[in-house]
Amino acid sequence: MTGGADPSAALPAHGLPRFAFVGRDRQIHLARVDGTGRRQLTFPQVPGPLSSWGGMIGEDSCAWPTLSPDGRWLACFRSPGQGEGPSELSASVLEVDGLEERELMRLDEGAPLYARFSPDGRAVALLTQREDQLELWVGRTDQVGGCSLLDEGPPLFFSWMPDNSRLVLHAGGPSGGRLVIRDALGSAEDVALPGSPGTFCAPMALGDRVVVAFSQGAGASVLCAMDADGAEPVHLVELAGLVAFLPSPDGSSIVYGQASADRGPYQGLFQVAVAGGQPPVKVVDDDCVAFFWLPDGSGLIWASGDAERRCLWWKRQRFGQPEIEVLCAFRPTRAMMFHLHFFEQFAQSHPLVSGDGRWLIYATWPGAPDGPWSGRESARIEVLDLHQAEARPQPLVSGDYATFAPQAGG
Image 1: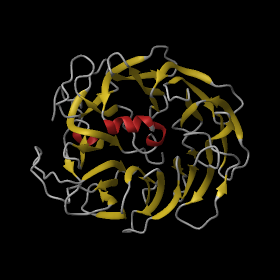
Image 2 (image 1 turned 120 degrees about the vertical axis):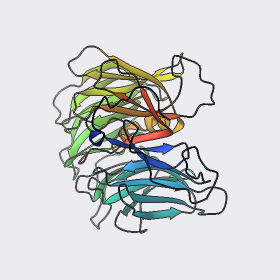
Image 3 (image 1 turned 180 degrees about the vertical axis):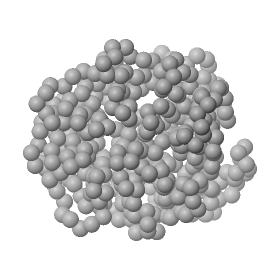
Image 4 (image 1 turned 90 degrees about the vertical axis):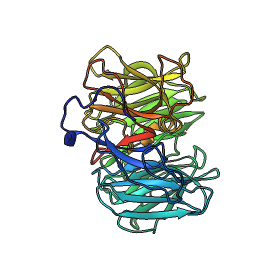
């Protein structure tokens, strides 16, 4: 499905970034941000009726496409159908511009949640759910099978260290939980970080340092930056309720939000230097459902709720500019809402803004917010040109989820 004006604005096609998306046929596809160069990367293992795109719709489906930082590989999960065919959840990596596909693992039961490549793209961490238990598996892209179980939750959040072998892990809650740096691909001993984890807060690796949230009891957390061996912790700020934070692209600061314990919106966004010694500064005076850095670190994009119109709004603020820019409204798909709910984990591996900072991509139901929605239309992928003043969203393809490749080294 296409519509509207060409968002590329006469740019050469080869200069446009590509994105991966889950199509209406529940398979993974690749396309450029002007809708050209579309390729199907996964195919159903159980034949079904012919889709409107000319492919076969099977009873199985693929989810959570994840591109490697260099754009060479794509990881995804495949969930089985009810008919004949594979009976287990599986995870695979595919060569984006080649023919190679390698199955990393199969599980006899469970649900796919999240995958993330190591910074060099040679390993993949896979998060799955089995009943109430979360499981983190790690495998190599140059091997078929051989994934190893690394840890169990819930909750369970993680971030790759820049050495491409270790992960910083938050597993379990404030009582009995752990914050550790674990060698996922070798045999080095764990480095236990000095404290219990705060509630539902993804740790972040910033070069040779990490930023984590330690529990202070009674629902309070303190954000700390420290060396990768747990030494020289620097207390950045103490907070109550639910906390989420994201590091700046250069790793010199973090932006954080604080919400009440009933999971309301984050009430404003604050920036604090990782080196410590300075008080936080409020940089966004708005309620946020989820927030992201612009790739060049010049500002932030976030989603705000609109209960009256039953939609969300994309907004942007550049540092040093007093005005909040209202970009567009959207009605997120179920997969899009899951991404926004756990945005600090997805921001590391499933960016919605292209690496050049120009394009915002997202999945939405049509009709937001200017007209009624019948519920019969297909969800679609839309793109917004952030470099154009008063740009309007452009629908590209039918689908319920999309992502760019993360920046190399990010």
